Image (cartoon, rainbow, N blue to C red):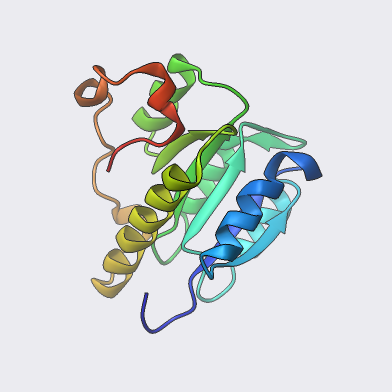
Length: 160
């Protein structure tokens, strides 16, 4: 994962919810910072370069995952948003993916799942940045219809 330091932003307001995720990211050598709400996340996304990945809780004190999706879309460089849900929810999953988030995971993820999501998300962001693509130039969202045959328990990490 070459030249620049890989960075992630965790956006949540409850300590216990993201502690395992933070440990997993740090174990992968990914610099991890935290924002407690959308406003703080917006400031963190103004960093140069912005984080490669943003993991957000579904609901935040001043907004929700859609607000974070809008914020990442304004970034000058590719930032991939991953929504972290407390439980598998197929409607939420479809909504998240159809609106253009990079992925959707549940809090009950396994280490191999998070490693897959992180590696594919970072590779995608790095390739887009190397090609000079901003978050506004994201490729079309992956179609949920192609993934409809997946089992609900596999919602822990969507395929890339």
